[in-house]
Amino acid sequence: MMKLIKAEEIEFFYIFPEDDLVKEETTLINNPIMPENRVNLPMGRYTSKQLIETLQNGTDTRLAIFRINTQLPLPLKDGYDAYQTHSLFWTNKDINLKELDQKIKDDSYTDEDFRSAVIAHVQYAFCRHCHNKYIALVCDDVIYMYMYFPIALAKHISYQDYYYNKTGMIKIVRCPNCNEFIGLFVLRFFDKVEDGN
Image (cartoon, rainbow, N blue to C red; front, side):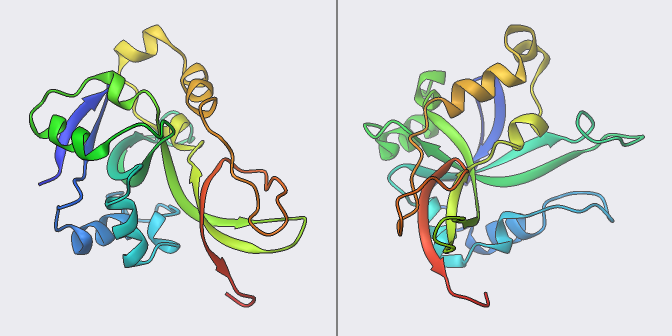
């Protein structure tokens, strides 16, 4: 029941909390649709089924599938499109995502509903101060370079301006152990990773 929508001039598939997509979603996360012999760092490398469900049902997160254009940043003869699953994280804590879910179903959402949303992914976050390693939700600064931006959007703002506007809304979370900055746009920490993992 996921729905293709367009917000801030970008088309993507919005995944609803009630979507029974965990099996399909895990497949999409672990195996993005890309040509053979291309390396990718999928969200699923670090993401358990339980964490996927948490992101899909969060009060400030939803899963979404974005189209990226790999022709721009990579020196390939022929560019190709790929689809990657990421998390949307709303920096505005007043957002009611249940209301937004309904607005999307009714086609009554606007760009304003997504103004405070940033694209994020799950990855390891290592603190160089106390040497703890965590699984964390991190703003995906790379996807903003790879993302397929329609010509209409590219005429009005640069990729860099769009990225800085999005990251400027983030309140960066510090290491839960020593309270130092980790050096990433960490939005939320999940589990601490024990030595040897």
